[in-house]
Amino acid sequence: MRFITEFRRSDLAKGLITQIRHRSRTPARFMEFCGGHTVTIFRYGIRQVLPATIEMVSGPGCPICVTANADLDKAIAFAQIPEVIIATFGDMLKVPGSHTSLQELKADGADVRMVYSTSDALKMAEENPTKSVVFLGIGFETTAPTVAASILQAADKRISNYYVLSLHKLCPPVIRAILDAGEVRLHGLICPGHVSTIIGSHPWEFIARDYGIPCVVSGFEPLDILQCVAMLVAQVEKGRSEVEIAYRRGVRPEGNQEALRLMERVFEPGPAAWRGIGEVPDSGLKIRTEYQHFNAELAFDINPGPPSQPEGCICGDILRGVKTPADCRLFGKACTPQYPVGPCMVSSEGSCAAYYNYGEGL
Amino acid sequence: MCLAIPALIKSIEDKEAEAEIGGITRRISLWLTPEAQAGDYVLVHTGYAIDVLDQEEAEETLRLIEEMAALGGEEG
Image (tube, rainbow over the protein chains, first blue to last red):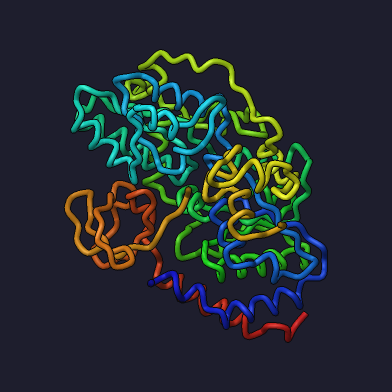
């Protein structure tokens, strides 16, 4: 496939690995923020081919994993309203909230439907005028503009039974929160590729400037990751800390201005609760007053009750990069992709699922 | 969840397009990439094109990787 297969060439991968092995002298810990990068790194065994000087840690870049139980419980509470159809991306179905999951409710008769796109959810609202469609808006800057576009389309078409539960989250503020907490010391950051397609590379500059941490925006194929690691190693060895883009075919420094404009029109920043990290100011997106008639939280009364955490689950520590799935006593025993206890085992991009599926650390 | 895959735009109608993704034709939205043209490769995320892929940059990156790979262990 164009733009994919050429970035999987093993001859070039070998050359990059050799280069990284010869150049890397200083011990360095690199975090891949994005769950998509975690999957590439594990699927292609990249950790195993890197020299001992380089330690890779996974970050909190999995939107489902970082959604706090209190917010998951809200989504689940909406599914319990009889006239509501829940429209959601598939990954959300199996995520356990405090008491149950959307999948369990669906088995009990709740109307929970998987969609591929917000366009499907809008169409669902048009085809079911006597029902209310609540779309679960979970995702980072990559996804939020598509949800903004759906709200603008609903406004254009005067669709009055389409609602969004906006649990969107923004990446740069949470990285700042993690760095400020000081629990994990980083020498390089692999910045998320498709988040940067939207926001560009400028929003990462504070990390290089204020924290002295080299940043490289990476794509998702194995050559992309290896090139990114080689660029981080070059910065570390030369004592530089700058923001560079390795994924130039899909990321421009200024991002996607049209997507940012739509996002800005519909949403405004607000506080958001992150699993394991807590509330981070201006790290979420609220629906602006002008579009509040699409806000599911204002349209329906729900009472999800106080959230509770599964006993023994260390997803929060894993998301901060402080612990690994191998440190969890539930991992692979009480918690598996078939019967997940925590969200990092549910999402295909969660660290626990990656460890489980690709055998790392077992 | 931020997965996005390359697709080739076949035809455009208003803010929607027919695009080929790995041999399958899908309808995608161009709300976020109004500049996209038939014949462009775009990155598709949840049914929306989020970027027009830059062919020249892709080739340049591959050239750069080839150079880095060729240098291999020679320096350092």
